[in-house]
Length: 144
Image 1 (cartoon, rainbow, N blue to C red):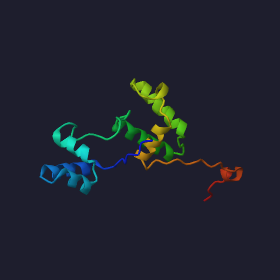
Image 2: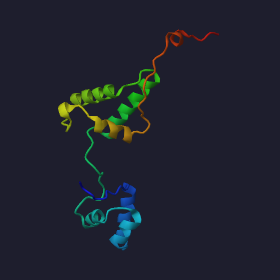
Image 3: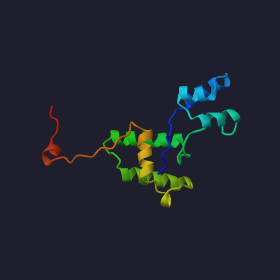
Image 4: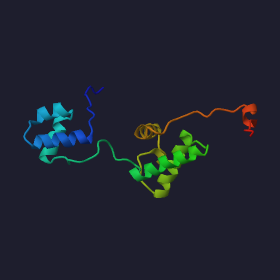
């Protein structure tokens, strides 16, 4: 098992660290101060890797497409029809098929990791279990 420490830093931290290193602050000091990886910072300064890039693999859906899905989920939940995990995955699979995109997914259907990452990226979306209404609660109406 790999015992390396994986540092997590924001792109803002990297930008500030790059500016400090370009101003003459030693790379080792800058990396410790801003919590960025020393080798990555050095590679960006030397032009080996681009200064501005996203960490991790490329996303399957664009930011705009994901925002449309989040908006759709919120709109449909407001009218009382929440979407299940399988419903969301099915909708995304259909969207990918309609867009004719190549994906690393098996049969172009997103899996558990994609779903967890999607929820993590959009914290305003949450999983909730629907409650069954009893017959009495279902028949209850508001009288004026």
